[in-house]
Length: 357
Image (tube, rainbow, N blue to C red):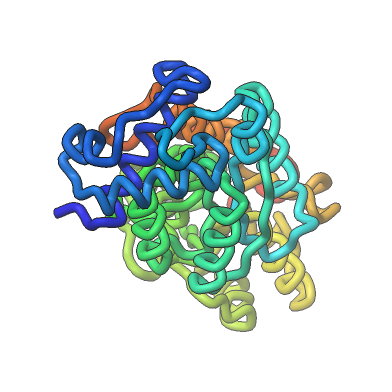
């Protein structure tokens, strides 16, 4: 059952879209509140709230004893053509986030929109506050890179109730249908496993970072699928969480682990450094693959074999989905766009030293 908030938002968005596409011309007189109530099958209170917000945003003007009229393009333009990106990041100088912003911004510009970027932390309550801030700026839609989408579902419902379109970026909650843009994590996981298998590795571990994220789970699923295709058993031992580097080093020396697929480059670089501090060599003692093609550390460009995702393309796809929704080109069931990934082979993988000849 629709809430009153949802009903007024639907009325508001409908009238706004008619103004934007020219169905309601400049200076045209709008139907009365009673007439709109009949058209949309809602109460006059619901209509009044929708019209009040449209007036605040500059789309209409209400003249006493005369009626309600569509305003000039100039007054509406002052508060329209804005979208916002709410972006969670552990490191705001990380080039991957800059690429996402660039892709989203360029796509928005091609549609005649400007992009506002708001950095957020891992707290869903802080994300909600950032949403309200953006709505006060009259943004027409939101791109969302949440820390944990499962904990942000109430925030997404809040936007739905307001009639504000949004698209999730990089990560999503599988239990909450949504428009989404990310990369093909499953294929990336399969690519990493296949390369290690080709080098004779069978004792491979997957190292998680934030394994509650669907993106990491999909990488693990792709990894497991390729391992099973090779006739290898996959169990809980193949998944490492909260790496104990002393224990891992001992397992490597004993030949119990010969290769490691880290769910992202940040963890791969950290792991390589910790293992080197314990006297181990990469790739001679342990082969390591990452995911992302993260350029924040010189070690990556020089050494780390990884699965590359195109952050600029993902950012652009996210904007495209949102702007297509705003223009009425996408309706109905949610759409997901997955960008292709590719394997970048450098120096952190070699043949299994324990391989049987």
